[in-house]
Length: 176
Image (cartoon, rainbow, N blue to C red; front, top):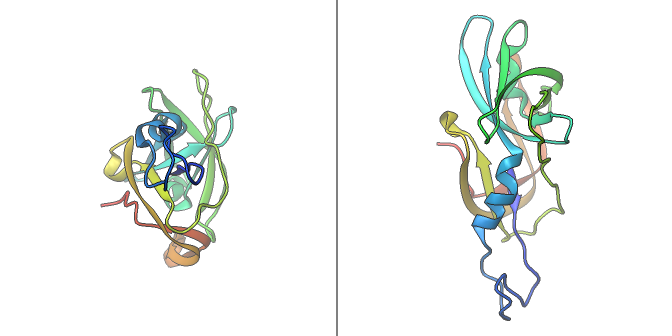
């Protein structure tokens, strides 16, 4: 998940005038992290993996990557861990291996806060990446937008590749 923080040109979060050079990362984290979840996946053979996703709506739909959940296809399980500690079994709604996207559904006991999507940030904008590298939930890091409109091939099912189209390139590293 990527969070973007912007302020109006000529102002700052504190109200001072001048060029904008930063934003309050703690505010972005507080607003965005409740929307981001960790997915724990077990294949039918018992192989475990994990990844992250974000709530799309208050009904419990979670957007993630196909490569995160693909090992559960054919008899495995997906469990979603919310930042509040709630663990929920998930069911697959749909997936697209060609674009590396998937949606799972959970039935949360507590209300959820869907992620808020915004406009595409410009090159140089400060952004934040939130996820669960190595299963470490609620990992938050920052960087800048390095490029726009990137098309990148990534590994997919059955030794094929997926094509991420119009991706936003950042230097906000979330993986090891």
